[in-house]
Image (cartoon, rainbow, N blue to C red; front, side, top):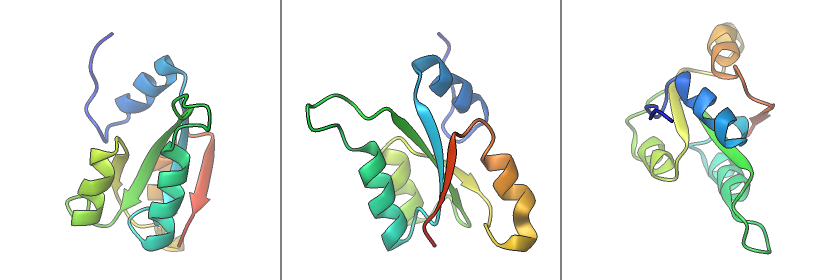
Length: 103
């Protein structure tokens, strides 16, 4: 299996190969969003790894919060989730099974 860079659309294909359920979290760098991401990535009570992979949409993918998410394995994409930027949300939700708005 080839390696994929974090934050690229090819990462979704890598996640599909691993059979992870990809979820887009809007507002992932905020307090509520970080709690959602941590819950999604936490192992199950029996210790099995989380079945989820997480993608985040961030205005600044180089921010301290976004870099912290990347360290957790989150795919971070540049963009805004406001209504007039719907195209960014649609593009970043490609291959995701769910979009969670934690804003």
